[in-house]
Image 1 (cartoon, protein in one colour):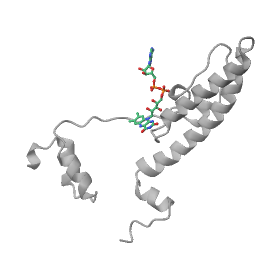
Image 2 (image 1 turned 90 degrees about the vertical axis):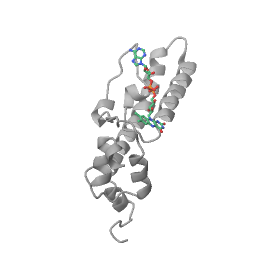
Image 3 (image 1 turned 90 degrees about the horizontal axis):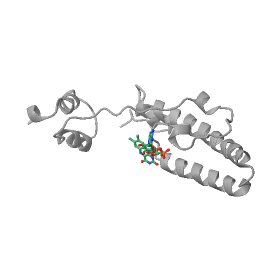
Length: 143
Ligand SMILES: Cc1cc2nc3c(=O)[nH]c(=O)nc-3n(C[C@H](O)[C@H](O)[C@H](O)COP(=O)(O)OP(=O)(O)OC[C@H]3O[C@@H](n4cnc5c(N)ncnc54)[C@H](O)[C@@H]3O)c2cc1C
């Protein structure tokens, strides 16, 4: 049966890995090639920018992070804040609307990027997910 597995599934399941049985079964049952999916994030310094009249960014374009399950809400929230500021300042002072929006958005973007870096280290680092378990006070070596 193992010989019919796609190569990456064979590599994962035959190397004495201690992954949960359910996960191994899921991987073994794959009948197509795995697709590597690189995860990208912007750096903290990339969300420190000066306002440029006539243009702004929102959502991933402004603050791409590795997926934390919050990216869609963050993008929608940006749109909401920008829409509110436009309603507040339109029609004469759209530039102030964007400046106010960017103040809120950029501080939240910085927070999201810092958080995502923490998760990247603890979930996807060389020592993950043990690093995450240690960080939340669970000793995975005890059992
Ligand atoms: C693997 C993975 C899992 C994720 N899981 C979650 C999750 O569970 N929950 C969650 O909230 N978020 C998740 N996210 C993040 C979420 O998908 C994004 O944060 C969110 O889609 C950002 O919305 P956006 O509108 O800013 O960008 P996008 O959704 O990327 O929209 C940008 C759009 O612009 C289009 N576009 C690009 N260039 C051009 C161009 N030149 N001209 C015209 N159109 C263009 C693109 O085709 C795209 O449709 C995940 C992301 C990944 C990669």
